[in-house]
Length: 503
Figure 1 (cartoon, rainbow, N blue to C red):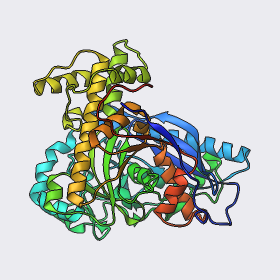
Figure 2 (figure 1 turned 60 degrees about the vertical axis):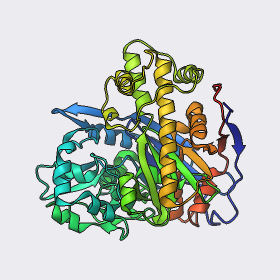
Figure 3 (figure 1 turned 90 degrees about the vertical axis):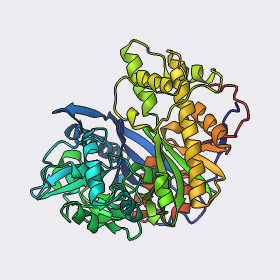
């Protein structure tokens, strides 16, 4: 197996940053995933690109409450405020001015807010099973073929449309997707950011507006979602109570970014080529290509590809593939059993194993819920007629091989369905640090893989804010040049034989 080679990218082109940039301008990025979150400060420079400073990290995860899986949103928002308070302190100490705040999180989940602005219940997690029972009822009202022809959304049983159908009543309530809910609590303004709206199953992929006919067909109130806002538009200014609690400047605004974390990540893919594919690798893997218009064919629907909005009206044509959730859940199970080998050591041991081992379907819904992941993986292997050794290294290698194979299948389908030929695959996010996964992906796809940046989501978040503030101009090409400036990227060439990789 060949090693990844480091590539120092060139700085952004002249003209990507406007002249009147205030030297003390900084931007706060709230970036929350399904397992952790952080508040970061971003600084934009015309010569060195974007620098990020992590101010506050905090855990996130599902909690069991009343027999269901929920997000502890009160605790989550308290951590957000703690992070913003710390960011205000750091900026003041440095003589910097926090101009705006951008928020990105995972998709599909929401909180219900009443007319008084109160959160009426603890938000459900997409990992809860409640929406499974509503799928047939939704499809009886709106056939899957019609849903896809309008929304272009990949079928997942936890899409917002199925979750809303499970609500006992919605009159007098509005559904605020998680980043929009955080923005509402900061500003008092109710909006739905478009990239996340496109994951609900109730958004018209061509018109870029709510598919009201589906709301009517399902008996959902037409105002169940607030009005739409685009990345770069101002949501509002901070409420007095938030200013008092955090110490942020009175003119700090909340600016809509690609609030679906994948939208922000794709905006920061450091691609120089037009025909690139991306893998946003984290808890989930989002594998696809960037298009100018959606693909709404029946063939695309049957292949279960999704058409989600990206920054600047682009289309993220992708498919959800299983992700590093499998690995993190295995680590959690092994730690509970007293096995505490580090992740680098686990990957090293897995890389030393021979190729051609057993594989699973990494995006099988059977792996969605937590608990006993190693046992479930071995059971899935047995169902294929193979056996998987009861050793962590063997399980890890199975996960890595299975993810790489899933990526390769998905990219081949994307090429076939769009008529495009992909020249290079960019892996961004946490999985870009996983050298074994990157090399196996190059081998499986037969295409070079460029890994990095790790913090693509926060980079995309900050760059959209910077452009809204007039610090950056231009389109996605300019944003990507700034994202790449000063970033070390690793390149992995396809290898005909796998001999292991050193970590």
